[in-house]
Amino acid sequence: MGHLPASATKHPIAGHRVFFPVATVFAIVVLPASLSAMLGVTPLFPGLASPAGHAHELLFGFALAVVAGNQLGPRPMRTLVVLLASWLLARIAFIAAPTGLVSVASNVLFPALLVYHVAPRLLGSAKKWRNQALPAALLAICASAAALTLTIAWPSEQRVASRDAIAIAVALFALLLLFMGGRLIAPTVAGQIYRQGGNLEARVQPRIEGALIVAMALGVVALVVEALTAQLALAADVAGLALVVAGVLAAIRIGRWRLWRLRGRPDLLCLAAGYAWLAVGLVLFGVTHAQRAESFVAETLAIHVITIGSLGTLTLNVMAMTRLLTLRRPPASTRWPLYGTLLLAVAVVLRTLGASATRPSLLVAAALCWSAAFAMLLPVLSLRKLEPASVRAA
Image 1 (spheres, rainbow, N blue to C red):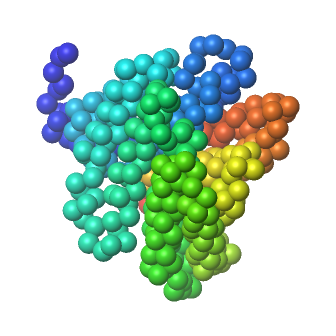
Image 2: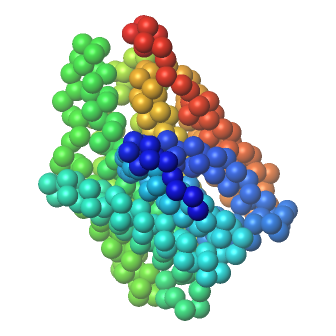
């Protein structure tokens, strides 16, 4: 390989400029490709032909790429090239041959590289115990990426089934969304209400945030114990209860933000919608998990409320807001994220109605709504900076 130009190392580039576009494009194509593979329409994507592979690429292909873009910050081009190359190799290898050695190695390598570049900064800057939730959740998510990859590649050699690994990974992403979503939405809503002449006292709500972290941590630990002890009933009950408590606390937190006072900020309402999906999804996840032996389909639907409704909505709107703020454009200056948020809500409804295997047309419609939602993000990511006079006018 040739050497990168000196400017590539002297002038760092924000991680989101690299990973947000590739994550968006991947989101557009991965769900239709996975559904076509699972329905037997095409044999071209063996890694996406199972529910475990479908979950793997949604969580650790798409969502982990968004996390990378959000958390890396400015990096030398060389670092971003290495990270992007490892991510691409992991995606191609898993989709083509999920049980192969290249797939296993690359899907362990990318999360490890991400931890190497992100964790030291996060751990060093977190002074309060609540702030440690972000690096802890990120470390655990990267570990769960390796665990799910191994359970798919060598299921007979692992005590943890892919179903358990997926539940743990979803709970970890939920913890990450609860923490980061609250830290983003609360001060932004408070700032907007202040500009409208009001005051919002309940912002981050540290007591509720602390209780959320404790509840989710307890739920994750219980899920891990359950997975390692052959479906221990007590652990399943504890996990279910902890997830329900977290969902209720998240709903209380949303109510105290007084979102009905907002005017002219559909972008904030879209972020809040993603947080609301998370509250609903966690309650459903907890209730169905405690009865998972009798309600596997119901638990799967609860997981999709979290992944499609919350993970999809929050990532879409965070990527849009980040791009607009980088360009010094008002976050509410475009309606594309609003339309995408509405399409994701439709996707959740269609996925719920299409839970029966006899209604694949609804599943196809849900996947297309997901893809269309992220296609609406592309015009936002392609925007350029306004001229100075236009910036002042905005």
